[in-house]
Image: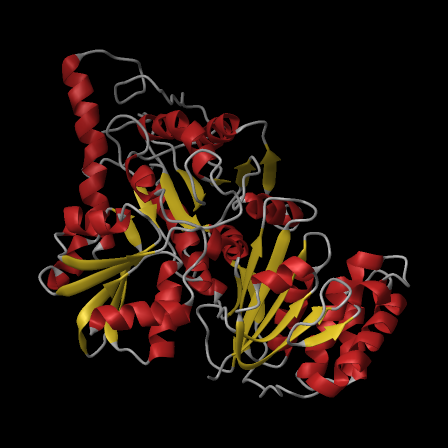
Amino acid sequence: MDVFTFLVGGKAGEGAKKAGSVAAHIFSSLGRHVFQMDDYMSLIRGGHNFSVISTSTRRLTSHYMKANLVVNLDKRSCETHMNDIADNGIMVYNSDEMDNIEGIGIPVSSEADKYPMKKLMYGVGAVAVLSSTIGFNKDQMNEIIRSQYPRGIEDNIKFAGSIYDMVKIGCENKFPLEHGDKERKIITGNESICLGALAGGLNMYYGYPMTPASSILHFLAKQAENFKLAVVHAESEIAVINLAVGSSFTGAKTMVGTSGGGFALMTEGYSLAGITEAPVLIVLSQRPGPATGVPTYTEQADLSFALTAGHGDFLRIVASPATVEEAFYLTAEMLDLVWKFQTPGILLTEKHLSESATTVDIDPSRAKWAEPILHSDGKHNRYLDTNNGVSPMIFPPSNEVIKWNSYEHDEYGITTEDANMIAQMHEKRHKKVDALLEYLKDKETVNIIRGEHPTNIFAYGSTYMSVLEALKYGKLNPTTIQPIYLSPLPTWKLEEFKDQDNIVVEQSISGQFTQLLSGKAGINVRTTIKRYDGRPFDPIVLSQQIKEVLE
């Protein structure tokens, strides 16, 4: 394979995740492509954490669980990752916690005990092992430690040097890495979403921390001053959605972020946005449910919920990015669409895309800039019945009276219970459905990679990344189809596949994506490959599953 994979595992709080990020930085600095996936339990201390980073000179769309180098910093990691070693791979383990197992044992704990920071240094030891394995000398390793571990630099360097010397015989230059074409930035899916929103003109962000969307709040809070952005950590998800609707009344381009349980609390406010025609973008990052579910893992089981959330009839726009790069452009595009059609929208993603990190090539100049349709002359009717159902807007301060109303209303915004007016307003809002469909027919709504095999593979969201890497690994060549928009589903783009041989890959036990394709687009689905244990697909395993179906 042309892929090198490094896996580091240990207890939460011992630096395994940081070591993974440092490894990703090392690979990127060599001009290589990187894909990093972090796996962690919902425990601040003591839970098993691991980071797996795959790198290649070509573009990667997934990590690989079979690792060339595995560094296990505790006993549980050894037991968990015993079978995650690739052919001719190396396992380095903490001999203070386990012994008499195949691999290279080094006394990580007793060596770290010599320093004040103790267990916080374990991850530095993993970086030292990696440095030796890929052929870095100590000077190169020390420069990395200086830049990536600003606290206790001298102790970290001394500790890393000791570990480096211990593994030198079995590891030195075992896996020298070829340099790639150029150094690229490494960002997570959530960071890409944030940057896309900023490129699209975001003014306000409201959030209540809920994994895996929490890092959106943290990232934007750090960038607020740089972009003149207002970021609010509200007291609840109910407050979040109502504040967001209120902000849109002032003309502020507003986004919120949450996961399934939080969005469940937002649904009344989501409907409020529907009838007031408030342009609000909601990032819904899925995790396994229902209820609390498994907070730090991944699934695609909120699809049906996202498509039908809220009460009453109103236009819902739902789109899902399949890659970290696509998340940037699609977020800006969705921000533009909710303002263009004055309706709420959902950017649907999942933990695997939200929190995984990869090297990217992003062109900010390609991002959409959200622009409202503004009222210019004469009397202003907030809900003016137009040909496409979209009413020109004005915002405070203004000499005009501006009325937004959650009750059914007339064109001016005055409450009504008149039968004819109720029907007219329903029809007015419904015009936007047809207008959006016409608008999207000229846009990129489905990603299709043509193949020679007669069977097609459908996937959406981060699962599409796993499919692409699985096909590359298995040297398989079916056509792959990824609908970017899920509501409205671009059936005009899917028509050609209706009666062909199709399989679906998704992370839902009930096959929600399969049901959507079948029910809305009439797609004949022969088989659905499912995973629903909270973990993303591994390309090696998935390639075998796909191969069995294709044969």
